[in-house]
Length: 290
Ligand code: SF4
Ligand code: SF4
Ligand code: SF4
Image (cartoon, rainbow, N blue to C red; front, side):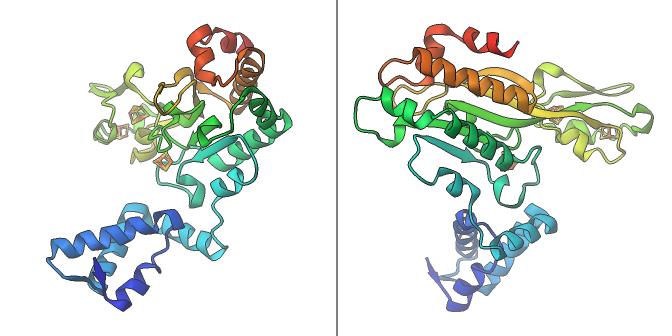
C-alpha cells in the first residue's frame, strides 16, 4: 500500500521493538483500507499510536522507548549468536516487559545458556549427528513469561512458561463483583455464595484474576514455571509432554540437566529428545527430580 512521506516517517517513531514495527505498519494500512483511503496518512498513524498505547499502556510504551534508546539489542538475538547447536526462543516480554508477564524470561535464558555451554551441548549434539548440520539439528528451548505461551513451548525440546498460583486470600474484602470470573478465559472461576471458587483442574495459572481483582481479595500465592519436554516441529512433529505444572528455577535447572544427560547417554545417531521421550517416557527425568 502507498504511504504519504510524513506518515512513513512517523510510523517508525511509535516506540516498538524492531520485530514488532511491521505490526504497526500493517495495522495503519488496515485502518486506511477501512477508511477507503488510497494512501496511508498521518491520521492512520495517529490512530495506530493511540490503539497501541491503549493496548500496552503508558508504562510499557515508555519501556519500549527506553529499550530503543539504549540501542534496542534483542536479547534473543544475542543468546543465539555464534556457532551453537541449540537455540532459544523468548517471548516478547524480553524487550521491555508485557502486560501479562509473570517472570523475567531473559535471566533464566542466560542461566540456561551458561549451563548448555558448560555441559558442551553443542559438541555433544554435533558428535551424534553424522550428517551436515541444518537448523532442525538444533536443541530448542522456548521460554514464555506467562501461559499465553507466545513461543509455542509445546513444540520445542524444552518448553517453559511462567505461572502464578491464585488464592482467594482476603474473602472479607470481596464485593462479589465477579470481575475475576469474567476475566478468566479458562472459565476456571465459579462465583459461589461466599465469593469466587477456583476450579484447579481448569486453571492454567495465569494469575490474571489475582492481578485484576479491584479489592485485593485475591493474591498470587506463588510464582514459578511449567515445563514441557520432547516437543518437536516438522514432519515428525510432537507435542511436548508436561514434566511439571509448577516448579521453581532450581527444579527447571535440574530437569534440564536430566534431559541433557538422557540425550548424552541414550540418544542414537540423529536422535532428538522426543525420540527418547517416545521410547522411555518421562520416568528417567522424574527420577532425577526427586
Ligand atoms: S507469553 Fe505472556 S508475557 Fe510473554 S509476550 Fe506472550 S502474553 Fe506477553
Ligand atoms: S474480582 Fe475480587 S472482589 Fe470481585 S469477585 Fe473476584 S475476588 Fe471478589
Ligand atoms: S489464574 Fe488465570 S486461569 Fe486460573 S483462575 Fe485465575 S484467571 Fe483463571
